[in-house]
Image (cartoon, rainbow, N blue to C red; front, top):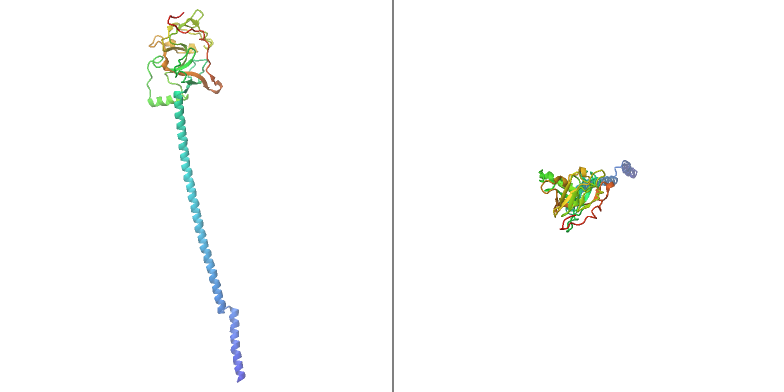
Length: 305
């Protein structure tokens, strides 16, 4: 009986051991299954964390891209604003410079384009002279031999020509900057006689005389005679007798002798004295002076010789 019992116990034990061995081999051990579950859960959590991290990185990437896009937009807007401000500033500076030049030209120094050959050889067609408007501003008056620019309205031109006021304004601004021909009423000539002078043409040698003294007019274009028109006039006080250096091509005081004013230019119509040639570059120089009138005496109440 004991033997059977032992066998029975051994059989039962063997069965348990067999089951245990088979459980260990097949991986069906509960402890191992629990560990495996825990490992799988951990792996799942890790994958989830990775997913969340990936989603976070994606969100962060999208946010970073959005931020960069906003920065680019801001930079673009700033650049556009900066460009607008720059152009506006440039326009303001350009406008201020234009106003300054116009004021400077109006009161101090005006460029003047020479449109004809009436002052050759002293001034050539296309020269841009600089007219000193301060030369006669403080009590001084034009002298014999000065090259002057004057408004001929009332002397050389009896009526100011009509025209479109807007066009006239723009043209006047361009002329004031030396970019266009001067107004039709503006002229450039040389002063030959001042108030009280007696100017006569011509003496027996074909020369003009002032106050009885012949004038050696070396500035007259070579080959031209002092005048083909004889005259003998006394210049009224406050006026000027003016002539061009290219006598055969100049319409000057001689051509207005029989008209109102007698060809005399009022001193207060003088714009200024031509002191410099500013353009072209090859012509840069002062307007040449002359000593042709140095020997001419001043006018006296007693008359002229």
